[in-house]
Image 1: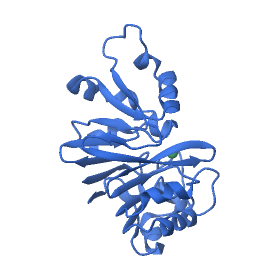
Image 2 (image 1 turned 90 degrees about the vertical axis):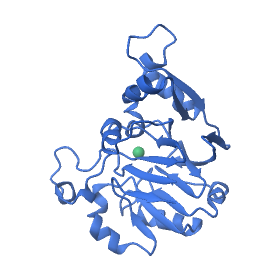
Image 3 (image 1 turned 120 degrees about the horizontal axis):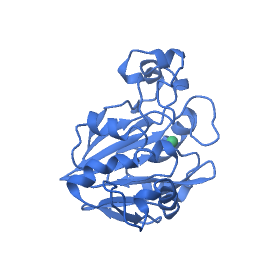
Image 4 (image 1 turned 180 degrees about the horizontal axis):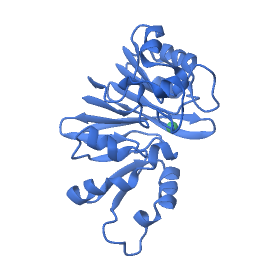
Length: 253
Ligand SMILES: [Zn+2]
């Protein structure tokens, strides 16, 4: 399995438009973060988790010409706003599968009403195939995917376990029974926004507490704010086998 970090930044991305914060002005490519998303490839399958406003740029940057579907964690715009840009995949591949909680499918249908309409569509509008995710395993390609149910402040959010790999973002609360589903995972990705506490995201300490409960071999932190600091400085302070993810990072399992 190959995982490509398409984006590792929080909702505004880094740099933030107009910001003069030193991290936003950094020239280190590892400090430039598009909105969070990952591409997961195994055998001949390729799935993307979330498609935020940077989706088009991310697909071009990763030279991705075929994906089998998009899986959504939740409906916030930094995770969904790029849905219209599935059009090239739809034109080449046909009706395009998406996977999401029923509530998220409803939210997408409101925002992208012209895609989800039952009326005749404007030419060029993509067709999607809606697949509802409940908190039970579902199949992508030849793999059984295990949803991990958590809370983003009060909003339900899904993380996902793909075999030995798990991806959780925008988590603030994860019940113990859900953490049990992550037992034995080799590579964990989890959100760590910044050092100071936040209403709806793990800060760095909360992410490290969570990692200590899951005990994966390796962890990569994502959904990072400029307030966390420079990549190279933060990385030096992290525990062993915990790494800051950065855009374009690829890992193989
Ligand atoms: Zn987010």
